[in-house]
Image 1 (tube, rainbow, N blue to C red):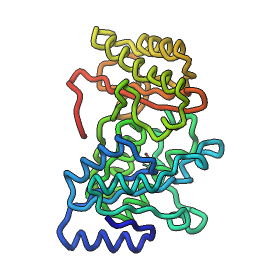
Image 2 (cartoon, helix red, strand yellow):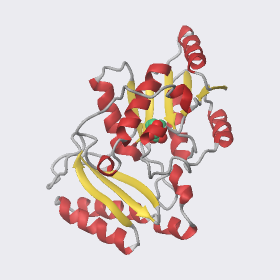
Image 3 (cartoon, rainbow, N blue to C red):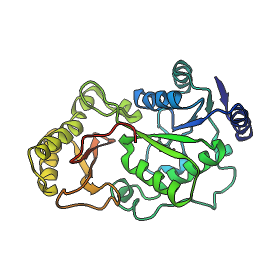
Length: 287
Ligand code: PAF
């Protein structure tokens, strides 16, 4: 496995894989890898002849009061994990490689980024789409892999790829959960043991919502009320609990189509997100 930090070098690795006729997979990450990333990498290794994992804690997607400086950096464990999973190259650029001068060009997806996480994290998605556009231009993958846990991110990136005609497929893989249901996240390691126990309330709220939906409830406000009650009783501080259209991310009142149920909740000072899809059809795997 190659570990590369320079753009020209990863381009050379990728060119040589292409010359060998290999399909190229990219798994963009900010490191602190866990089994959720592992599942993305496993899918990439299964589908592609050459897999690049990028590890870059992207400064432009963090707000001034967010956790950029304390975001977990576990490079040695990450490289060992990638090696075990059969990754071909890690691309771990410095901030100077990715942003050598003051960035004047940004990629911004409108509307889809107004609500949910976009409402409280101004500039976040602009940072995400800009860095993903850069990574796509650097690595030129055939397939890029993202997790359903960051549902809005996946929808926004897909839209960017469609709108700007990037020649690649976006694969979105299911959420990987701890045995008690907590969605895997690099930020889970901020939780104290008590908070870790509390944090399962996000999953429990989503499960209760799904049960009530399965029993026939189609009123979004009733489902939201149920989830808010459960989360607040467990001590979570709600940032949002929303039920939105899967395509537009606009809130829905009556669930008569495929919807995304999305939560952002503070457990102590740690902001966690989670989501599920409600559909009249059975759930899909990788899409
Ligand atoms: O989901 C993440 O880890 C990041 O937002 C991403 C897609 C790697 C861009 O920095």
